Amino acid sequence: MQNRRGVMRGTLALAGGLALPGSLRAQALLGPAPPLVPMRLSPDQLIDLKCCIRPLRAAGPNLGTETVRDRLVIHNYGHGGSGWSLSWGSAEVAVGKALSVLPDRIAVVGCGIIGLTSAIVAQRAGLAVTIYARDPIQQTRSFRASGSFTPGSRIALAGPAGPQFPDQWEHMARYSWKMFRTMLGLPGEPVAFGDSYSLSDNPIERRTWPADPAIAARYETTGLPQQNSEFARLDSRIRDIVPQSVPLQPGENPFGTPYATRSSHMYFNFPAYSHLLMTEFLARGGRYEMRNLHSPADVGDLPERVVIHATGYAARDLWQDHTVIPVRGQTGWLVPQPGVNYSIRSNNMSAMAKADGIVIMNNNPDLGEMLGVGDSMELPNRAPVEEAMASLSRFFWPADQRGAA
Ligand SMILES: Cc1cc2nc3c(=O)[nH]c(=O)nc-3n(C[C@H](O)[C@H](O)[C@H](O)COP(=O)(O)OP(=O)(O)OC[C@H]3O[C@@H](n4cnc5c(N)ncnc54)[C@H](O)[C@@H]3O)c2cc1C
Image 1: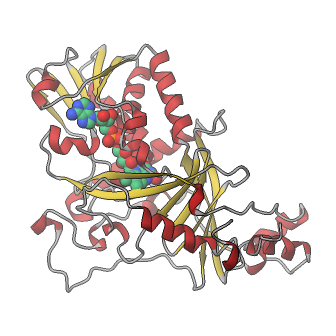
Image 2: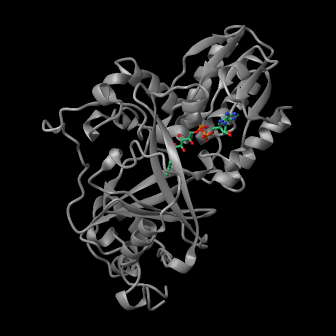
């Protein structure tokens, strides 16, 4: 393994018996940490590009109700960059509203992560469920996400969401976290934890986004957020349950960069997780009917008298909800690499190892949450993915070996 450069450095340093900081002393008693298997970040490994739209609503997800003909429609859409993460908690709220009218069966419109979890939560509460959807989960926007626990990502704008929203968000995030905990350690690892390293030549600090007084326009005047300071920042409300990043000392940093942090992050393996959910849905007698609905009137025509509406970004057309703002994002996927079970991030470029591949993202550090806002173009662009791979390669391979790694 002569190609391994920085990756071996930490291990060697430990074996050499450096004076170690507190967190590592316990590790040293057990012997050095196992070396990381280096990632192959070369273009020949790139097997897929996926582009997707996050359904952002300034006020947060729509969980309101309305009546269409005599159907009770409970909305459950508009989860921005947090749909996977908040799905169970959001489903619990929606199903709670359905149960208030004591139905024995309900319809769910949509089979993305929000529709599917809504259906299962309803089944677990004893209801018969039929899902009506244009696409099964493997063909939805949900399946084109990256798949980490990111419950506070582009979930709302602080002002329009109002003072009640943070409590509701916290309830959904905590409830979802508990549900994910029940799926750890299952075959196929539908939900898993991995180490995540942030690497930098400069001290790593949490970036804050103070309001820029030079930008007078706001969501309220334009219908689109204009700067990062408008987004709700809620993650600190659940820092007691979510692992936080810790700085690594030189002897602990396997990448040898001047600065590094490590955290444990929860992520979702989409194929295994979707399979698990669909299996439970069908085993509980759920019916799936492929159907394209064209208007709220079509929802009113469904045989079930209670309907959970979970069409994500498509609610903008189907329900004419133009408060749903597109936020474009894209991922590149590399061949799964056996033994690579961690993630790295540097300058907002990241590579995250999952069972079905290594996910590459290239997010402009200066745009933050504003990246992709208002952009509904769903065609992927290969260049930024290749740029991220080339940039992150330097942590593993000498310059002359990067392309061939
Ligand atoms: C690049 C990227 C990365 C992301 N990463 C994460 C992450 O790490 N963690 C996280 O929590 N979230 C992440 N997200 C956000 C997440 O993907 C979304 O919040 C989530 O997919 C929304 O799911 P949904 O079920 O509401 O919508 P969708 O997945 O879009 O599902 C909508 C469903 O409704 C159906 N439908 C639509 N229109 C109709 C119609 N007219 N008639 C019948 N059926 C219809 C569709 O067929 C589909 O079944 C990411 C998003 C992007 C773009």
